Length: 173
Image (cartoon, rainbow, N blue to C red; front, side, top):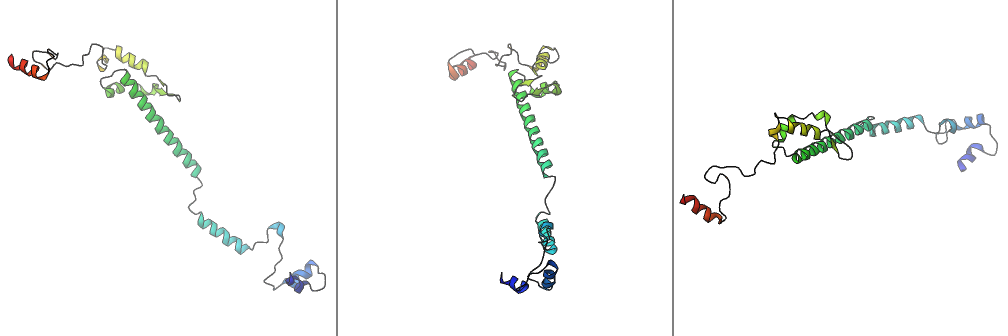
């Protein structure tokens, strides 16, 4: 605080006298702290310029973009979940060709609730099963898993003697 003794000396000064004595003094400057004058305008401008350089790539719309991306991702997840639920329902309904059955469904009436319950598909599948035009798309209880390949056995198992007995039987006829 010795620098103040050089300015004040042994006397008391008024504000005007003090400002007069400080003129030309680069070390001490008067400023009204209430108005924010304690920062030189050139220093503030330089600081602001540096901060703007740091954040020149800052996107003020980032929150909106993040929310849109989350919404899009959630929509895709729901679509995948709906697709899996529909495929499970088609498997349960024993469809022969899923693509053909899907082509006959009104997808706007099918919805997957938040608890995973699929609605709007059961009635449509039932109507397709009962229709003469689309009943062939579903497996029935009378469909046999053994298909006829021709020959004398007509796809049925004749003997239980294994492969050797089947070959012997085939060549003995």
